[in-house]
Image (cartoon, rainbow, N blue to C red; front, side):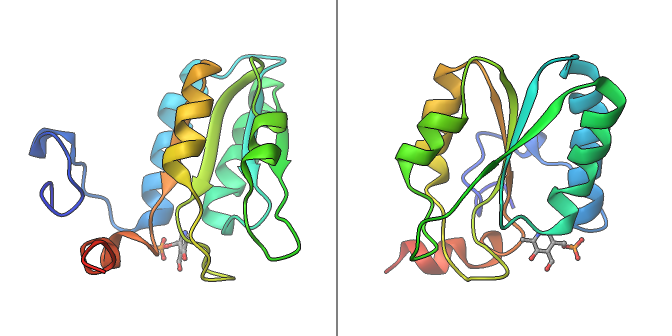
Length: 139
Ligand SMILES: Cc1ncc(COP(=O)(O)O)c(C=O)c1O
């Protein structure tokens, strides 16, 4: 699995029952410990409920707010939108790599590069993308 996702070490992998449990695990451990009142959590508008509900709950518990990345008319996530919504107030960015609704692939590496420069942590929901990532990279 570490080879499949290009992890530096198998010690980076935690197995869970499913993606929903994994996302809840991140939100209710890292999220609760690090999100503070007044922080912003940024999600893409097309997120699966599994990557939306836990962050709604963390935001409510901690007094943080949710902000959404909107897609353009071709359902693409453009960097202009990313740069305007992810700011120094952003604590966590939670985005799917591939949308289960649209099948579109979002530029998560670029999103992460920008988010990290703002001091945010990025959570990627790769439920759709992970199974096919090696297949995709061969093309
Ligand atoms: C993008 C995305 N995130 C999360 C999930 C939830 O996955 P699971 O059923 O493994 O909890 C799905 C399920 O289809 C999904 O497509």
